[in-house]
Image (cartoon, rainbow, N blue to C red; front, side, top):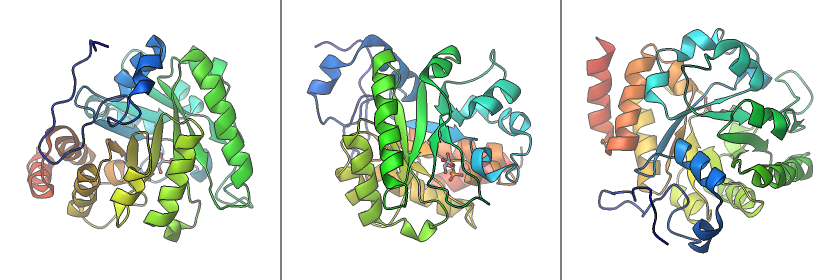
Length: 293
Ligand code: 5RP
């Protein structure tokens, strides 16, 4: 088949990426319908990489620091991200429909930081609503190993069935709730593989030591979340760069961008790592230059 889309041009050492996979499961592309391909191409850029900006944290954390007014937080950042990850409430109230980026709609929830169990999520938003809001994808958390593992995996499966009907990709989020220590390669590889097996088109997970084990066991593209804000910018550039070298296609990174004192400098430097193959040191230099502008 002849592709109309530009194939990615990759620096040495990178895996052969494409918006539809990492060169594995080739038959898949033949069967992907126009709408699904078009939505994935909106999210994953022609170099095969992506920078998603999540602002969905309030759905269980409430007014997270620096995200109290999401519209104000994202306004200066929008030019530099490829998509935003957001709930329908924040989308409708705080995002200008005429000046935005592709939307990944967070459609799971129903729990809170102060409730009994963060893993007890349901699907909060219908596929009809996602279509009405012109979502490029929908996102849902799964909680492998938790009390509600089965429910969250069945929610994912049902969402994939609905999404495939309308050509809407599903991004699964391998969530760990409050148990941040769960984020090791063995656990994340298990979660990512299960998410892919159940039909997710993209999987969002955490970077970890031995990250290649996570990516190599997952037959669909993997993006990395940041988790709670870390101490230095360089640490962020290092893990993102490392994860990209090991086969991630990009990030879905929130707090380490918009909780930074210089969020625009931060996202511009990250963009250089993701889309221009900048090293962590180069990214840090970009950050230092941009923060004084
Ligand atoms: C929160 C999420 C976030 O989208 C995800 O955790 C990425 O954000 P951060 O980089 O701040 O961890 O799923 O529910």
